[in-house]
Image 1 (cartoon, rainbow, N blue to C red):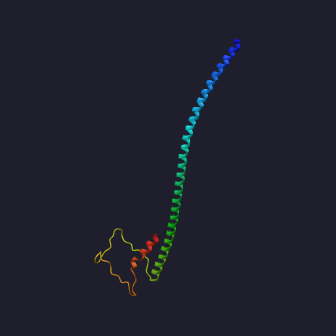
Image 2 (cartoon, rainbow, N blue to C red):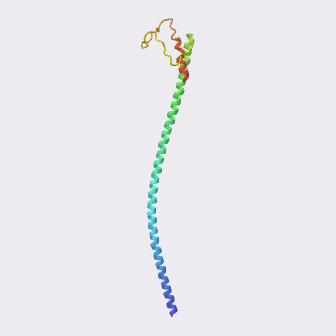
Image 3 (tube, helix red, strand yellow):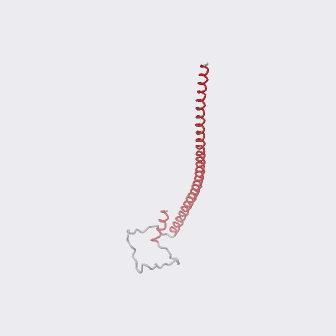
Length: 154
């Protein structure tokens, strides 16, 4: 039986080829598994780094939120302080107007030419003499409007 022998030899050759192909596939799969294992380790390391960055970013965001909230609180306090200061200035202006009206003092600003120096009768470094007592005190009427004008600018 030559045919049977040929068939057996062909089958044996085919089996040998199939075994070589399978062994090659096993080696290739082993290398792929090893490569994928290395890739897995690299990806796990990348994930760990990214999670640390996410944690740091969240901490930075929390810190920024706290700073912003503090700044908003400081701004609101400053706005309240400014509003209170405006009310206080308005009360001061009303008190000054009442004082000036009560004492018949006009609220006028003296017009001086720009760059014009005041004229001094004695010494420019000597303070003027004042009298703060007595029934004839009228204050310095020519300067009475200045403080109110300054307060009104606020």
